[in-house]
Length: 351
Ligand code: PHE
Image 1 (cartoon, rainbow, N blue to C red):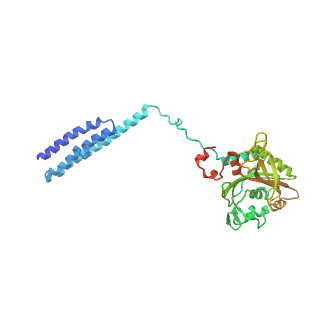
Image 2: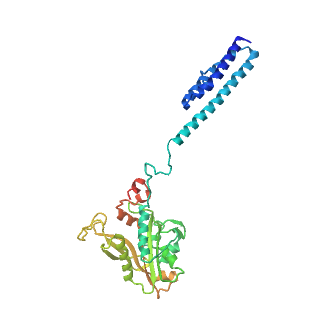
Image 3: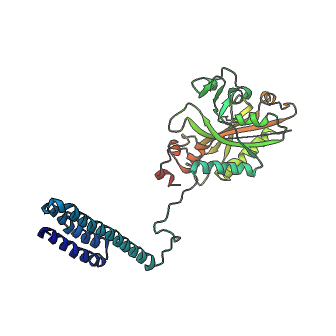
């Protein structure tokens, strides 16, 4: 046996007796990795042995190389086992150290969401009508021209039916421009008495700080024998008082909508410039008038009843419709309608 070979075999023997205790002493992963490097690292003892194989006679090199490689894989296995031991010890320590109650609330409270101010306004408005005895109905946003315009007695050349004002899907079909389509759908095939309210999305080609091409409306109507304009005034005044406060003044102004006769608009006293003595000097919000328009209304036109198969000689009724964004903007002092749809958390967190 050559000296070189003998020397290598001795080194193998001494390394083999050294690594187990060396690994056993390690308490942390870092210590273990350092210990391992002293054997298997670039400058480690086993690596040095592998380099020395060149000095062995060619006919013995294979056998000696196998011995070194055996040692190398032995140490690799021992390293893996030691690593697992350290890992387990660390985990056991963590688990036993103190009781960890995962169900405790976090130190930083999770922020809680809330209903969107617009939906809150809608729900509050619907709740008032529900309280007054109305039932809630829904209608489609993609609607037939028939239900959105024709049966509501819009003349074919009415500007609202113009291609420039509405979003047309195809001839005869459009995105509804108001919730009045629900009047048509709910009255057709039903027998009065009816008291129905509906909230939903409507679409118009408008876009500025107070108009969005997509916005929300609430529509309602009552049909029965002997429904009068006095009842219209009574119901809508009660609604306005519930929404804006019992002492807010209201006024009805004549107005025109093709599907009602007579038609009116309801104004409430401006809540922004009201003084304790009840006077309203006028402000930017009410454009100096002291009044804010909140809805359109009127007695349902006999032609509309006929279009829905209801006898206009027997029944009368009234209808009303209003935007929800406007109410929310007045209520919360929101200056730009777009804020309601951008859903910026910094805005929404203010409600
Ligand atoms: N549909 C009308 C609008 O969008 C509002 C309205 C509804 C007016 C019902 C009268 C009766 O402006």
